[in-house]
Image 1 (spheres, rainbow, N blue to C red):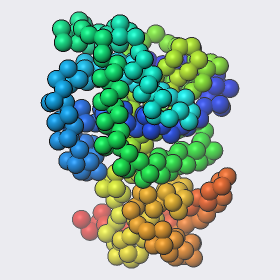
Image 2 (tube, rainbow, N blue to C red; image 1 turned 135 degrees about the vertical axis):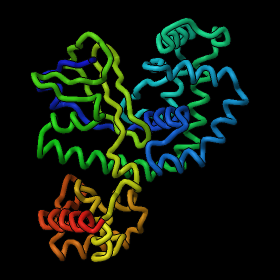
Image 3 (cartoon, rainbow, N blue to C red; image 1 turned 180 degrees about the vertical axis):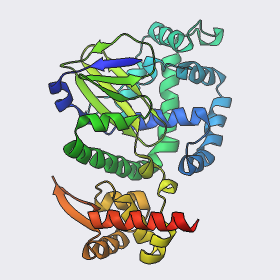
Length: 327
């Protein structure tokens, strides 16, 4: 397995970063796979997979580039650089275009674990990659970016609260189940590959949520490392919010759905983004739940976060048990 050694200061300085380019690249990997992990992804694929496939059908060289660059185990490095904080997506695409063609081909050989197809022995691969990623952004990500950003913010808020309650080890354990794991003794497993350990003490470590896909790890040796991870399933997938039928009958399905979501702290705007309800509806649901003592609120910086109270947890658990006994 691949793991990183990091000291307490590096862990304490690590932070969450939202990144439109990471969201775009993750969307490309989902389009390439062609199969979603839940109904929300499947609906998105139904809307955008035909156009993506038509784009590649009109450009067979780029189609081969995607197949080579996403590889079986490794992503070609030049395809997925991690932007600096606040770097516009256009600047990241410009960096991809500026990649030395020989370096791009070398990256592709690594991802393929072998020689390049003859069609990819050319110098315009970085330009083709940037053009494809720009297309994925403009056609399949930008129309949803405002909502996706709020979903990502909700995930970050929940995990930040988890840090304060349970520490970084609990958060790192939950980022990429089955891959990322806190091993103890300041060791963090980042993937299942047989790689030499890497000491990243003193480096910059960022955690980047994305809504589709399962994520990847990234590094610029020796000073910059990142874990890109799929955000919490209940936030990424509206269909994953299992509202007990009896709770829906008691509170109403929409209000019950809000209570289910508040296992992790969320703001009003984040609830609007995740539920698709209007701001007024979410506000009314929160008032009723607050008055009933089922949720509580607290200020975190400039945001007001809501979360379930112990009474809310007891109610939800009781309704879950009730539905189980009836089934």
